[in-house]
Image (cartoon, rainbow, N blue to C red; front, side, top):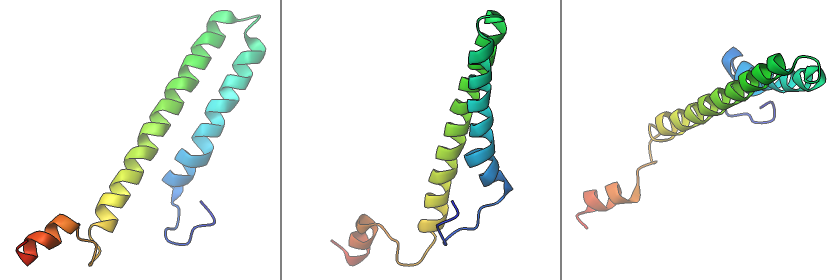
Length: 90
């Protein structure tokens, strides 16, 4: 995220790309250490971490799609070829 220069990451970007995935993986690691003593709690922790990773993936995919749709299509000169052909009468 830091290497690209087109977009300046906001707090939400840092949370969903760095903090939340790290927390989910840390939860999985902690659950693996406690699985032998507290099996039920460890399974709930792993389930929670997996759901968190799923929601993070959905959020990041949605964020990427909306960025491409709203930013790239709103720029001049980014018309699709079908639209250009229709305007030319082809």
